[in-house]
Structure formats: C-alpha cells, structure tokens
Image 1 (cartoon, rainbow, N blue to C red):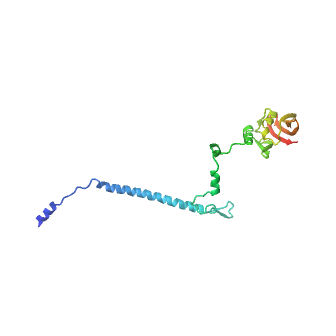
Image 2 (tube, rainbow, N blue to C red; image 1 turned 60 degrees about the vertical axis):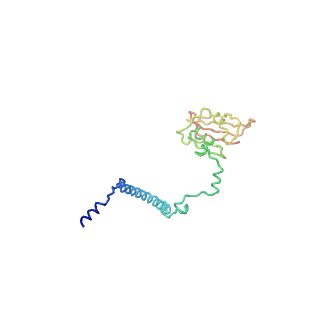
Image 3 (cartoon, rainbow, N blue to C red; image 1 turned 90 degrees about the vertical axis):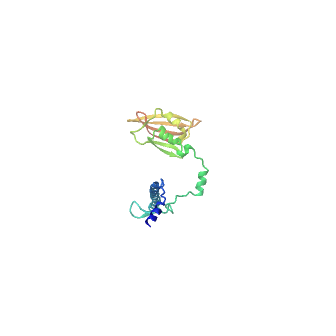
Length: 213
C-alpha cells in the first residue's frame, strides 16, 4: 500500500511557478494605490462644490448688524454658473473687440489735457464736455505756463467759448501773485469771451476762468 502511494506521488508532475506570479501582488498593490488616489480626488471634487454651495447659500450680516442679506437672489443655484441673456449675447456678437478696446477706452481730449498737459495737478469744471474753469489741487504743486496766450489758443477745442484769436488785455500783480486778462475774438474780430488767469510770480498757473460775452 505504501509502495503504491509512493508511486502515485512520483507520478505527480510539479509545474514551475510562473515568473510573472511574483508581479501579481506588486501589480495589485499598485492598483490599490491608484484606486486610493482616485477616491481621494473624487472626494475632493464632491466636497468642494458642497462647501461652495453652503457658502453661497449662507446669509451675510450687514455691517451695521441690524439685518441679514442673502446672496440667493443672485444665483438660484449656487453651484450654477451665471448665464447671459440672449439679448446680451447678441449685443456682444455684434461688436468687434480689437486689442485697444479690449484693454480700455482711448483717452479723450479732456483726459489728455488734464493728465498730460496739466500733469494731473488741476481740477476741471466742465459744461457739456468743455472746460469753463481750471483750479490747482494744491498751490504747492503748480504747473509753470511759459506763455498763457499760446496756452489758451493751442487748446481752443476744449474751452466752453469758441473763438479764433486771443488778445492779452491786462496784467496786475498783487503780492506774490499776478492776474492776467485775455479777450477772445471770433473770426470777425468780435469779442466773444474773456479769460482771467491767476498765477504766482514764477508764472505757475493757479486758476483760469472762461466767460462768454
């Protein structure tokens, strides 16, 4: 009996363990790490919108502490992106946006005059987009005007009074300041307005006023 069992065991063929068998466990561990990372990412993607929704749906207390204001009126669904109306989309589609217009509007003549010619040191009073009065923001930061007559004439397109020529009428010194008066003439040499300019003794402009006649 023992002999038969020995013969049976000797007839069993032992197959070698495949070489890739040792990689099976390694590959399974790698799959587990990938699954864990994917699950973590999915959790983040799921939780963030929930937190965002809770935040957007929360009420905000007004600065004076008297009441609350909800932002739900802005977005019905906090996680939903705002949608443009068909009218707005059509309006945008009908416009062409170049490189300049996408950055901002070009400066106007008034902008160039106030921040270029006057270096941003003066405030302007305007009527219908034209200047009627100029006043320094501070008398310690003034702009020197070498020739007021030329200054008035070269900027005629921005004054409230339309004229062709400028004539100096008078100059009066009062202490450390001087007041100058100019008459504005049309193309027929008829007086159409007057300019009064106040400067310091160094010719730095303090104020300038135009009046139509």
